[in-house]
Length: 110
Image (cartoon, rainbow, N blue to C red; front, side, top):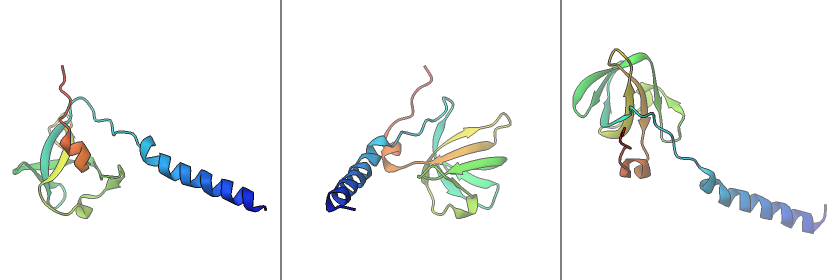
């Protein structure tokens, strides 16, 4: 393999690595999303804005990397989150927000 091919390959890898953040998509949140500060408890108990709530049986908690975490893996208090509720009023989806996401207001349902 010639030195020229190695330089081209490394250049392509560098350009791809620099372009990845630009390709990152904002997470789409459903229209009925609400925002609160979450303090985790022992499943299924959580606190949203200081009010005791319960997660649904199939609740999903998405971390800042948009992968799913179990409630026991979430640590801290007053974590800024978006969440949705099921028909029974249980919290069924939670998104732990990045600083950038938390800085933006939720879109209105108009």
